[in-house]
Image (cartoon, rainbow, N blue to C red; front, side, top):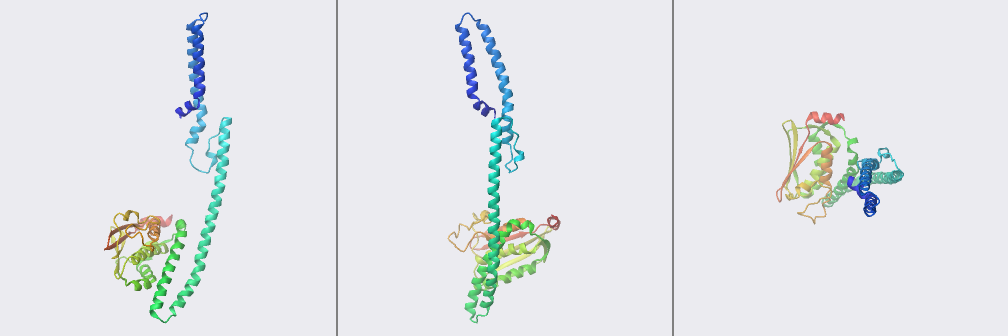
Length: 334
């Protein structure tokens, strides 16, 4: 700040030094004026000017020093009070610009909320004909055609479900209800919802659950497991998916192991990034890069840790570590 102040006042300082040099020159050339007295006057002037400069530095930079450490918020009351006409101009411009930006942000937020509501309404509207379509498909007597149509119906249903939860996930903290959840029932329910897809791809399940109950939010935990199962089914062919649960040091753990195409080691740190579809099969248009991202968002909200181990061509293991009981009780009381 001192350097900036001196740069700002450089012309004034140079003018003062030039004037003092001029006085010294006049005292040197004019023999009628004692040169020693001129030097003394110049010294006193420089000393007084230095003191004046220090005082003005603290006075003139107070506003800008406080402004530099001002927090980046829309609260204009935290802007320091101006003490000079130029500081008042700066303060007024900051206030006006802040009001303009706040108005624009409010309008954008209203538009985003409106768009989100419109999308949610659209999804709910689409669910009605989709349910009707399912009933119509089940009445088809040709098994191959019915199976294929149900498979395509399921894909649309899963995409709509993913989109619905994606719009709600920003407010997940307001929607959590921690309770005892029957993991076995939840797991079988999610497997049943993927039945047609699994039949189409020749995929079975080996489920062995030592732990039957956990403290979590049933709806969001089901959505997270659905994304992991969908991911496992999507990238597997004619193989089983192994699901196990156990307790290790008071931590309930669920593992989901598939024997699909696996994930490249360099991609594992990025698989939970939004929109990341992997480098091994980058041309795969079936990947959206959203399933695992949403699963990780839900897991973080539920304090569930997801670990991934994978070998290309041999499969992937997702390990879900649920928080301890006392941690979930604390989360439920928040």
